[in-house]
Length: 90
Image (cartoon, rainbow, N blue to C red; front, side, top):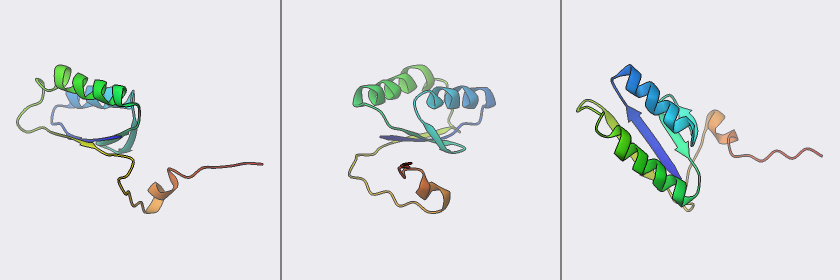
């Protein structure tokens, strides 16, 4: 799983970057996306960011990608704690 956090000053670039990330993952907060997929897709996302977006980012922009494994412990509170619950209807 990847967790991508960004702070991009240019509105057009920020919108484009968010649309790109939304193709692969879910928005957790305004500028944080969670991407769960195969390692091939995760690698592809990182390569696309580096090849297509990194040259457009300025010194005031901040993009952080966290590689999280299945063994990472995630503690959730509030609405977030319901996001991974399974619903079974009989």
